[in-house]
Image (tube, rainbow, N blue to C red; front, side, top):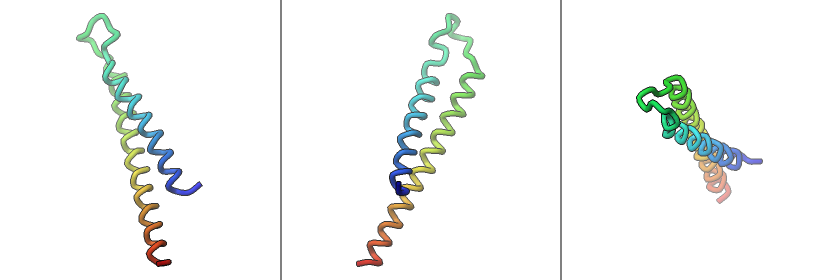
Length: 79
């Protein structure tokens, strides 16, 4: 498996984590009968998960860009 394929797989995983965390944040407090009493611990955990997923996304995107640059350099050396 090459670096581009690994990075793309990581981007897909990060996207799924971002969607899951965003959905959980959006639904915070929707199930409670007292809408003024949000569970701060759950919201904090979901924000941490959202930040982690975004960092994972950024890292995989940087890996994909680097792999693309390496392939371009190889093509330029051969050409």
